[in-house]
Image 1 (tube, rainbow, N blue to C red):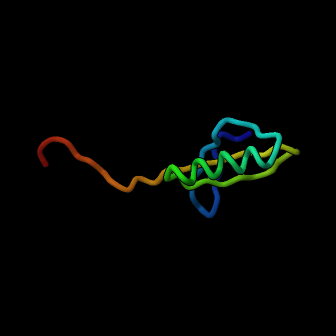
Image 2: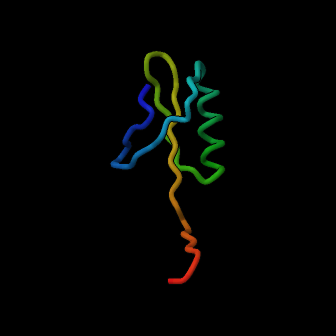
Image 3: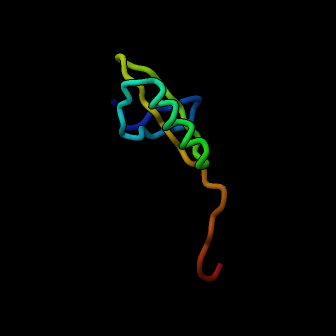
Length: 65
């Protein structure tokens, strides 16, 4: 499995798990979504995979500007 994939022009990272059941993958997907991640689920070769990305919503700069 590729460690990253592009969906709609955005880069997503594989969460590292191979889910045998779609319900397990859906559970992981929903967990990521509820924690502020953008997430995608795909089926490939009879297994399910979840890819995620986190968009920075706030940037903190320390020190003098």
